[in-house]
Image 1 (cartoon, rainbow, N blue to C red):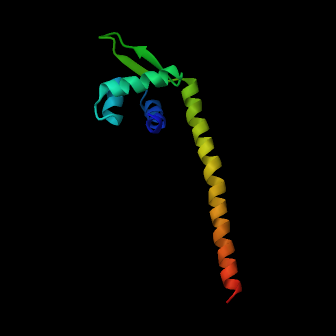
Image 2 (image 1 turned 180 degrees about the vertical axis):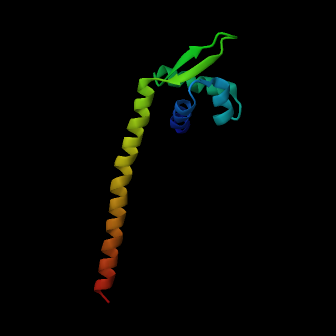
Length: 104
């Protein structure tokens, strides 16, 4: 679930409102039960909310404000990780080139 969490939330954001079966087809090889359990976990974390349809108790899922904030924080954390990493690697490459050219 942890690896799918962000992907499911992004998918719901782009396609609101989303049926459980749509999530099952996209992420769980049409396994409705697994999709339902994971969506209920996301709902317990207040990342998504349920709207019940009028016919046959069909559930539609939409993102909550907390779900949208989760995506924004995830982007920010990713940026804070990769920017220093890229700078460090670039610095290491420049330093190595400087050392190698100094001895020639």
